[in-house]
Image 1 (cartoon, rainbow, N blue to C red):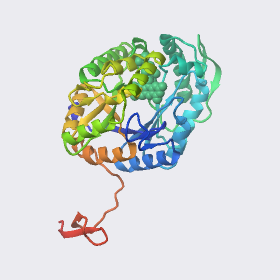
Image 2 (spheres, protein in one colour):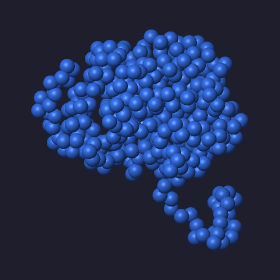
Image 3 (cartoon, rainbow, N blue to C red):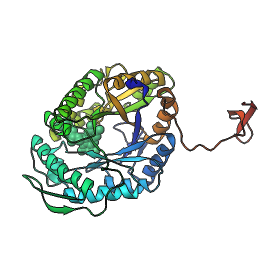
Image 4 (spheres, protein in one colour):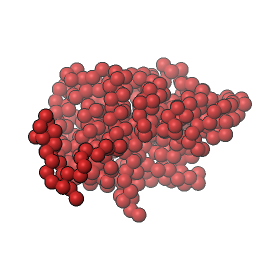
Length: 389
Ligand SMILES: Cc1cc2nc3c(=O)[nH]c(=O)nc-3n(C[C@H](O)[C@H](O)[C@H](O)COP(=O)(O)O)c2cc1C
């Protein structure tokens, strides 16, 4: 079976540090509001997405707590939740992960976030150099994984001391919830080959993604393992290519050059992440050449850290671009769009039919079989046309 024959695993994103219709402007912005996150989660649970990524950071709601709240209100949605080694012990994180997997009945996915800002890490009490963070993570996840898989672990390591650590209650998923991870440095790729199930990349052009996929495959193969691959991208999908590009322009239409400069200066100062540097290198803070590869637009990265690119176009165009990533080996997409509630509907309604995804789940039939056309049927209802047989 060709890589493109299998439908993508398609997740959405919970904007747990805020949302809006325009980047770099307070116009039509939405505050951080638990009720809004519930609206997004319940919508995407019905719209055919398999899960949501919940980010982590000082500006975000705490991801395990938020996931527990959203899990209680959804039926099938999975939650990709960050574990940040160093912010708590592996034994404590194992208890958090196991309980979240239990209360959600096996809907937890774990995202290893080692961190890419020395400043933010110092606030959490982590004072390790860039590459040392991965040595630390290696010890951390040995204990964490062993606890989730067997209920006990001991390690007298260089960074982690866990003496006769125990986990009383096992997770629902066996042997444990899967580990996802994104990091582009050599140290990251060396670390992840031996540890994770799914490697995540931000939305770089296909050639650059292919190069990383190859490096990760080699790193895993050297340890006798296989890893699968996912991509994190924004989407601006409209009925036509022109409309989609207009929407992209509108998203940054209130963004000033000063705001771009200020954001880029903060990234340069606060981040030692190789992945982040690769994102910035796509546009270098310039707004005049943002289509960095066909239909891949870097406008979001002018002011947003992390995922900074969007696929822009009609459903057919975007589906064709996604197939290029699938051919490289990508089987999972973590998508988003501004604002996240409306764009979740757009992506599901316009793009999913083009990429073989089912769209809304749990639909209750809306007729006894007559063909219906929306609108005009009295009180705004449907017009029944004829038998559908
Ligand atoms: C899909 C994806 C999601 C990420 N989510 C977060 C996040 O929620 N919070 C965060 O601080 N870093 C996040 N990161 C950043 C990485 O976890 C990593 O800590 C950082 O980029 C350092 O990597 P480096 O090895 O490329 O230097 C994410 C990266 C990717 C690819």
